[in-house]
Length: 376
Image (tube, rainbow, N blue to C red; front, side, top):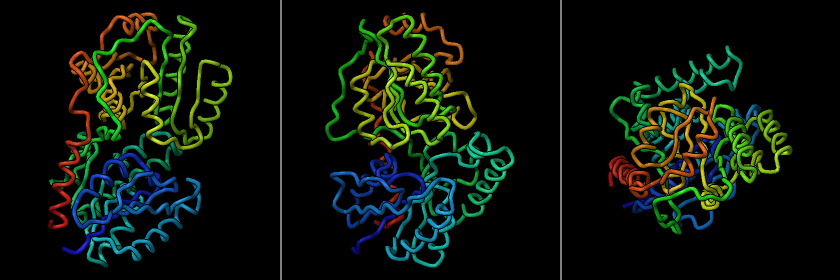
């Protein structure tokens, strides 16, 4: 059997991205006679990567610059050099370049739908009103036009199956469940928040939509009740104005620690923070682009038996109740006194760490699909 080359690519995600590298890449490296190539934004290559994996930190540009356009040509040159047998594209921005390559060469195209990109662009406030509507429409049209040329779709959220008719039946649900490090051990349960001052944690993308300022406001209120309360913000903030406001707030609050902010933070460093904090905050603001999604954080926190305080949402509420994983509140009008009493009183994860939060179930589905596409 000749060696097959699988290429996994994203324009903005770093080469050490959790889903692209830790989940898709490492899982696919288990296949026999396969070489896996990861192409993405510049970042350090992960230590201890599988021997049959290669990293291509091809992209480095400001998000709004001509470099973003030039990156497409550099990427196409790399495709011609590597000659992959199968491409997994993890962003709509590289769809057209990959389609053109696959049309001219013997190569199959798989689209990893990590977001409802058209909805996100049209509904979120990252661009001016007319521009965001145009971008959303354009991306939606591109996805629909190229859908028939895609051999298979990987889908990160169950809700996308209903939202994106172009998926048809050629799709596999691969949820963003937790892929533990080799050193991971299932923590003891149940978990209880002790009498010591609260150590609160906010992880991941720092943005208004994800409620970073509501997390700070809740920490302020709890600090007034218990002056020893602290909050750690660890993750990346892409918007310079938002970052500036966070930094100003941190300067005035000795109990607020900012890690990352303007720089990417390795995922394992974020996971290590779970062990030194009592409660994780998930203050996502109600929005049509996130309301029907299961954030990766839910799986990660549950895998570490970390109690959560989550924005009220029917989907997330059901998860919390099923696993006794935390408390749902309205972050726009929280009752901090009642929340503090509940955190001290409740026992969390009495049924144990839920088995359904781990990536191994998704890995099995991924390998089955890839074997079929590669005819293994």
